[in-house]
Image (tube, rainbow, N blue to C red; front, top):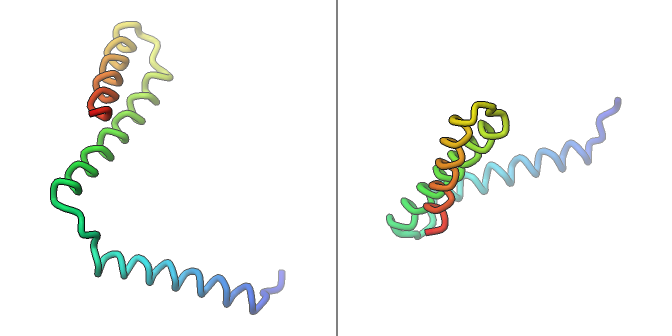
Length: 82
């Protein structure tokens, strides 16, 4: 497989642009308030918990365990709706 110089240069430019964008984001954090960042972090945590519980629910066979997971999933969905 031969390397095309233009493809390699394009790939290198894309990598550089992604690195530059990441550096800019670190240097200039969004001007969101502390409350907005906390709310966003809480929502992300709930989203990850919901995903984990849904995965466990899909393989749970014990009725009591399934009921507990369904209750937890409902609770998380309610919190996310707030």
